[in-house]
Length: 79
Image 1 (cartoon, rainbow, N blue to C red):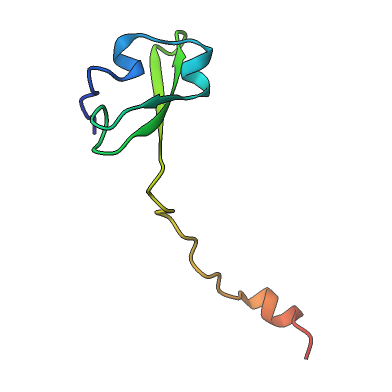
Image 2 (cartoon, rainbow, N blue to C red):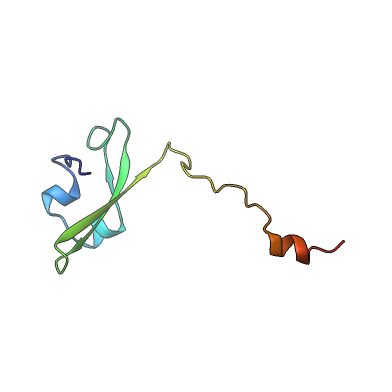
């Protein structure tokens, strides 16, 4: 699935320098209603860009599930 990129994003403007690789502050309204830090990596060889957005107000969206003890661990458990 693809999504249209905002006109002021680094991937669209073609800014592919050290600053965009380490992250540039984008004001509210460029990507979302809140400001973000945008990091954009360009690969000429693969002809693609990867954009990473850091949202300040967003907490973790993924939480690892509790691991279940497997048979080996039960067997090796003392007691």
